[in-house]
Image 1 (spheres, each protein chain N blue to C red):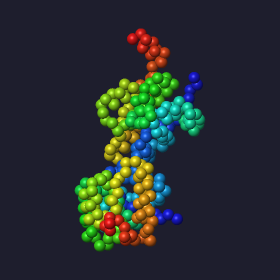
Image 2 (tube, rainbow over the protein chains, first blue to last red):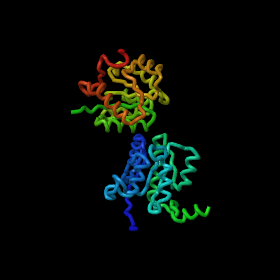
Image 3 (cartoon, one colour):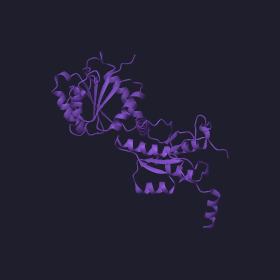
Length: 163
Length: 158
């Protein structure tokens, strides 16, 4: 499979317009000029990352450098997106950061199990957004994350059968 | 041509302010929204005291959007103070609060608030609210140089 061009874009998967606005504002304040692409639920995110449906043109809809993923969304939630990504070896270089209103340990644990690269809780205070953008900035300046290696799907099947 | 007004927003939650400012933009309104974090700063601003002495930078607002729950000096305190400020009697004051309590609405009306609006959670509703505030309290202002609240409107008259 030929290497796909990765842009510096951030794909935000978020159904709440208020959080979209706050993130846009925080990125601007932090001087992060990465293109911000917004999709509204997990299904749209999967379509986007697959280059499927509306999103076939990679010149217009480039593969993002980083995915910011809300958890609680209609149609396909964040965990389902993580589980789907887990099976996709071709997207293993993608950095996936959960951005959720939930600070529940069980949600964080589940996200880690599903190989999210990081888990950030949505800030309640405006000034906390600055810390959040620092973390994002650190992720964006790193080489593509090695920790998100998806297992070879064939091996996984074998293991499943063996076990 | 739409008028550009100055709106002073007293709210301790900066997130709410950022979202409100965006809602006005999305409603196609070019008003300047200025943020103060508590009632004390609102009073300083309105009296051109302290950090707010420069009226070129901090013009007299055409509308005050006032949160109720704020640290130090809350919204009710600001309303009470406004009643004692003769030169600010024509300032339009709309309470914008998360509280849906009838008691809060009643107190705000008694203290001279012109209107009381509950903060909507849905962003589209907030855009509608921005449009409505503009139509009701800003588009009617005959000259934007002076604060002027159209008579015959609002809570105080109902």
